[in-house]
Structure formats: C-alpha cells, structure tokens
Length: 221
Length: 69
Length: 265
Image (cartoon, rainbow over all chains, first blue to last red; front, side, top):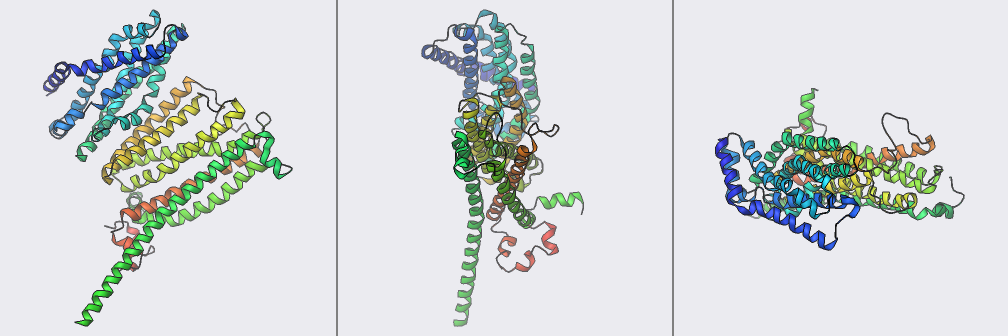
C-alpha cells in the first residue's frame, strides 16, 4: 500500500517536469523582476533581500498549493482515495510531501543562488537554507488545509490566498528573523527551533484537517 | 461635565476631530448592524405571514367552491 | 434537568428561538443603558490623560471594539468545534450571525486605532504588533466571509466554515505571539484579568462600562441574527408555521411541555 502510493507520487513528481520546474522558474523570475524594479544589492546589508525572498517563497507556494489536489480532484482519483484506501491520511501526507519536495526542498537547495542574487551576505546563506528547510514544511502543511477546501471551486486561487496567507505569517516572521539575527551576529537558534516546532505542530494536526477539508470538497461534486 | 462649554466639548483642544470621528464611526456601525439584524428577522416574519395568508385564502376559496357545487 | 438533556436542547433551533427572546430583550436593555452611560461618560465626563490629552477618549470605543471583535472570533472557533464534533446545526447559524458584527468591529478597531495613532504617535499607520495582528484578524474574518459566499449548499458551507474557524482560532495565539515578538510599540493592554489597571478609577470605570455594554450589544445582535436565520432555515417546519396561528398553533406555544422537549422533527 505504502509502496504503491510512494511509487505513484514519485512518478507524478518526476514524470511531470512542470511540477518541479514551474515553481522554481516562477521563483527565479520573480527575483529577477524584483531585482530590475528595485535593485537589491547591499540594501540594509541584505535584510531587504531576506524579506523579499521569504515573501516570494510564500507566493510561489500559494501558486503550487492551488494545484495540489486539483488534478486528483478532477480525475476522480481523490474521491477513490478517500473512499477506498485504508489510510486516506497517508495519501494526503504523501501528496503534501511531494508538493514540499517540489517547492520547499528545491528552494532550500537553490537558496544560496537566490540569496546571492538578492544581495544576502554569504555568512547568512547557511542559516537561510536551514530556515527554509525547517520552515517550508509548515507552509505546505497549513496551505494544504486551504487547498483541500478550495479545490472544488473552479478558480480557488484568490480565496486560497485569503484563507491561508494570514496563517503563514508566523513562518514568515521567524524565517526572516533567523536570517536577520545571523546577519546581526545574534543567536538564531531560537527562531530555527520555533520554525521546526511550527512544522512539527503542522505535521501532527494539518493532515487531519486537510482530510476533513477534502471530504467537504468531494461532497461538493 | 468635564468641559466648560459645548464648543470646548466639540474642540477638545484640537483633538475633537479624531475623537468625534471615532465615536461617530462606532455609532454608525452599531446602528447599521442593529438595523441589518432587525431587517433579517422582519423580512422572515413578513414572508411567513404572507405565506400564511395565501394559504388561508386558498382554503377559503376551495371551501367557497365546495358550497357552489 | 440533566446536562445531557440540556445539550440536546441547545442543539434545537426551536428551543433556541423560544428562549432567545428573553435574552435579546435583556441584552438590548443592557446595551442601551451601558453603552449610553459609558460612551457619554467617556466622551464628556472622564478626565483627560496627562500625556495624551483628550485624544485618549478614543480608547472608550477602540478598546471595546477590539475586545469584542476578538471574542467574537473566539466564539466562532468554539462554534466551529461544536459544529464539527457534534454536527450541531445551530453552531453554523451562530458562526454566520457573529461574522458580520465581528468583521465590522475589527474594522472599527482599526479605524479608531488609526485616528488615535495620528495625535499620539504622529502617524496614521504604524507597523506595530497589535495593529498588525488586528489587521490579520480582519483578513481572517474576510477569508471566512469569502468562503461562505462561495459555497451555496448550507450543509457544506457549515462544515467548511466550521473547519476554517477552528483552524483560524488555533492559529491566532501563534500569530499574535509571533507578531508581538516581531515588533512592539503599542501601549500594554488596558485591561488584564490578573493585574490592577494602571489608570485611575475615573478613567477605567467608563471603559469597563462600555466594554460590558458592547458585549451586551454583541449578544443582542448575534442572537437577533440567529433568530432571523433560524426562521429562514426552518420556514417549512411546523413550529414556525405554528407561530402564525397555523393548525398546530397551540402546540407551538413556548410554555407547553412539548415545546421544551426540543426534539421537534
């Protein structure tokens, strides 16, 4: 069961290149747009760039989350998974995991490059990567609740943003705070721990809430 | 009253505009919400009353029809 | 009467409709008296602040609006929990009734806060912790409102908004904590349960009166809206028809034993 689901997710992630490429391309393109509109080098010693990067991370995630359950919903796979699978939350968890791989993980891996583009000093880059690594799961998990609820609407994008962006604020604050602290030579572990705690709390509670929201959306069909 | 005169109450040493605007905003919102809630109930009641009337009317009509036959 | 029985009755729209009448009258009288006394007291009789002058009188509308707006959201979260766990229809009626007032009062709190900020901090808008978390509260309200507008089926709307109210309520403390950590410029809370207020009595007493008055208003307003919604949803049921002298009018009289059993369908 687990193996079959894992295989499916792996196939979805690696077969469809757009799943991996689109969020990344969007992120780099928005960084480019920002760099042109408001040149970022050396502004506030990199603090401005940190803020811009985290905002773009949130927005990229929103775009990707909007599509999280859409294909499965339209094709009816979601309905089957919720009805037939012995552990529907496993299906949900793996879906969120693969969304995180396509956004959070890739952002973490490319964060040194993004950081340089945004004028973040080199000593901030490892902490930036760490903050993204432990903070982005919370975004994917919380966002999945909203994505499950809005998947039934043809165009749920704006509503999804309205529902989940306020919930992302803590991740944004501590994510930016961690990198700011390292740039100020202050201790940043507190923020990293809080980000990890947020992700952990999300891991425990969000799949069940997502499951509940998906059931509502399936009933809407 | 703390203030000597009405003009002073309105002026409040130059802060009158801010204070009065706040109070007026609050009162407007309260009155609007009161009116909306009230209308919600009265429309329902009116509709139910109207439906009741129609029912009685039709009952009366059918009874009138019975006596004719 | 056992607790369990009471719980069942609470879930009955008919029972609620009947008992709400008395509460609405009581809250209405309380609201008119307390708000009338408190607002006039605060506006014209309380002494000015030695630092802020008369602009501090905005507190008498700003603080109650913010407090009641937060309480209403909290109430929606509790209703959401009840709605999700016990599938109580009345819970959704309560959410729908608390939403407009909560949203409006959050807007009032922001607006009056801005009016207070100009003479006190020197600007209409400061990126201060509590200002930002109140703005986020407004957007949480707007999100639920938009979700409810987008869903037309009553049952699904109930489940969806119950879920999102609960998620929002759980997140509010985290959001508030993080935003507070982020920046704090605001004066500390005017009222806390554990400490004595720092203000003299002639300043906080009118505030207490307006806060209580606005809670009464909220009770009156939410219960009235709930009554309207119940009439709309139950307009085909016998007890509602009975309210207008229908065939079972005698049965629906509130004082009869049958009306109190609560199992009306």
